Image 1 (cartoon, rainbow, N blue to C red):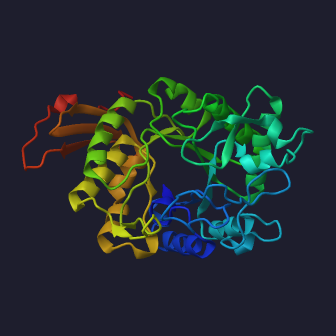
Image 2: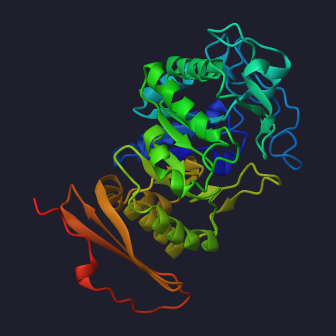
Amino acid sequence: MGWNSYDYYNTEINEMQVRANAEYMAAHLREYGWEYIVIDISWYEHGSGSRSGEYQYLPFAELEMDAYSRLIPVTERYPSSADGEGFRPLADYIHSLGLKFGIHIMRGIPRLAAHRHMPILGTDLTADEIADPANICSWNPYMYGLRPDIPESQLYYDSLFELYARWGVDFVKCDDICREDASTAHAEIGMLHKAIEKCGRPIVLSLSPGPAKITEAEWYAENANMWRITDDFWDSWPLLKDMFRRCELWQGKKRPGCYPDCDMLPLGIIGGCFGDRKERVTGLTEDEQKTMMTLWCIFGAPLMLGAEMTRLDAETLKLLTNRELISLQQHGERARQIMRSDEQAVWTAYDLQQRRTYIAIFNLSEEERGINCWINQLSRPDPA
C-alpha cells in the first residue's frame, strides 16, 4: 500500500513535493497501512517537463550518471542528492516518518553511457559492450537493453542494486519489462531478481507496464513481487469495467509476497503535469470509485494511490481509510469471480484474520437492478 508520483506529477516531481506527500501520508494514512512513497520516472533527467506540450520524454536528453554508468538524481530537483549523496538523505527522511521509499527505473543501461563508453563497476567492460543497440523501448528513448549472454550484464544490475541498497531504497518499479516486448525482457526479470538477492537489503520488485503474460505467471511470482496486468490505468469507466475481465484471468495467481497488479488508483486530483498541465478531479464517479476500491481489495491487488495527497478531499480520504476494505485487501484469500456478464459481476473471498467470507456484488450496467447469487457458491474456510 502506497503512493506513486506519476498520476499527478508525470516526469516533473521534485524533492519538496515528495516530502510534502510523505508528510501527509504519515499524518493521515500510515495508521491504515499505507507506507510506500515511490518517485516515478525521470528523476535523473535534466530539463524534464520543459517541453511537455511536445514530448513526455525529451529526445536526446542529458541524463545524470555516476562514474559507473548508473543514473543518479538531478540536483536541481533533488538538492539533498548533491555531493554524491544520491537518494540517501531523502530516503532517510521518509524512513524517519515511519514510511518506506521507492523509485522507478527503466530496463537496461543508459544509451548515453554506451555512447560514451563508460565503465561498469566490477568489470573491465564498458557500457557499449553489454548494451544491445537494437534493443530500445518503443516509448522512451533513454535506455538500451542488456545482453543476457554476457555475464557482465548481471554485474551491471548487481551494481545498480548495491547503490540502491546504500541509498535505503525499499521498492523498485522497473518499466519496459513486464509485458516482455523486448526479446531480452524475460531474462532481465531474472537478472533483477538475482541483483536484489545479492544486495543485502529487502527490496520490493514491481514490474511494469502490462498486460503481463498469463503464461508467465509462475516466472513473475518466482522473480518479482508485483506485475502489472494492464497497461496504464486511468480514470475511465470502460477501463475500469475491463478490469473485471483482467482480474478474472489472473484470479488464483496471487501468493504471499507476489501479486498481480491492477495499477495505480487515479483518485482525487490528478494530471497536473501532463501536456497542457490542466489538472483535474478524477473522472470516476463516486460509485465508480467505490467499485474500483472494492474490486482491487477483494482481488487482493496492491493499492498504490496516484493523487496529489496534500489536496485529498474528505470523501476520498474516507474511501482510502475504510478499515474493512483494507482488512480484506491485506488478509483476503481464495478470491474468485463467481459470475460476470456485461451487466454484473460477483466476487467472493475469505478474510483469514476476521475468519469470515466476503461477497462483492457489482452492477456494471447503467441502471438500477437486482442481482442474485446462490449462497453455496461462496468461498468456505478450510475445514481446520
